[in-house]
Image (cartoon, rainbow, N blue to C red; front, side, top):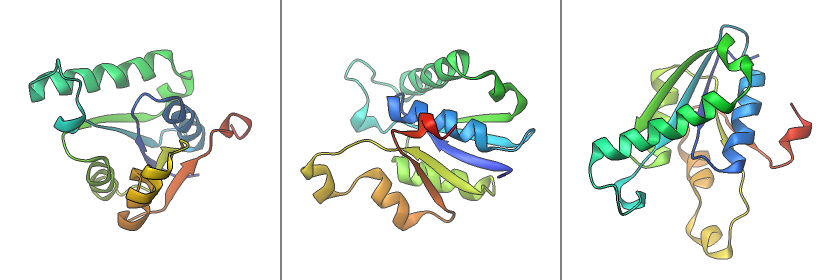
Length: 142
């Protein structure tokens, strides 16, 4: 069982599945670092300041923790809201926390996303630790 995992969380259904999977995998008293990346270009238009983007990101993660599995309370949970792109935010967090892996959810992507490259593809190229991509069928795995 890993002692530390970094979770990329963006409030999608696939990220929720990845969160459940990661919580189940981290050893008791282990660490889960939840990273929410909020690049300014992808923020909703009503949120202009970095503080507002940070507050929204924190609310998104708080929602996960409040509605999530009680097993999360057996873990050391750290939350990072990051202004950088998701790949930079996740790889940096993995290095700083000496993580055993980075966990992300899996979404079906259009052909244009496949041609340009998704966060997962870029993460696989840049990550300093193994990347675990939790499939949408992960409910059967936990």
